[in-house]
Image (tube, rainbow, N blue to C red; front, side):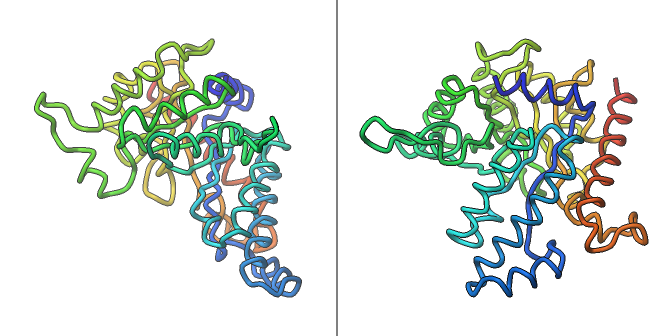
Length: 314
């Protein structure tokens, strides 16, 4: 079961945080980009290969620090077929190194289309003649619930069948999230509160040994008061907390999503880790060629900061 594997990894590494692989080409050191530009005539191929080398370096550097990585599909799809291949290789590399992979895809649709997304990322693709294959084989993925329960059901089926996990968008970290998510319903609830109730219902019967379900929620670190209220609604759901670091979310804000035992949430940081070698915090210690070492140092700093905040709030 995904949620138990995630929690076991958090406990083993004493770290409730993950590294997001939202890798823009600009984040990759010039030496890597130049080498692949010389090797590949197709610029998109060169870019994808440079990004994979960078991602592999980050994965290798943080493999014993964090329990999971969260590659964002959009940053791979930028480079077309080469980028999608890079995503598949990045997922495989992370899993080979013992990390869980949360595909940040935010997919959703209905019926057979939702089932196709679910099979691609969390299940198997039928190839004919009784053969099947796992296209990307992530451990979990983010999904958008705004088409309703029939858009979520195919993902739930694959969670049950293949031991995978979901993180459903509830209250996202972006400034304009309130345009829809904060609207008030006739009963006085906010939309995001109603979605949280549905997420908790979807997790019923899917709990693991720690009492949490493999159907989790996305709640941004930039909205700590909402996170505190949602923690009470989401009794069964593990919370994925984006927005830490470069997006402005603090460790104290992220701590609102945790339960009294220090579990219940996992915090994501992307840009602050990927570009740590550029940050003034590490100026003079790490250069461009030390990007992986700088990422590791920043991941360890993040771990310490979040654990400190959880302790202060427990």
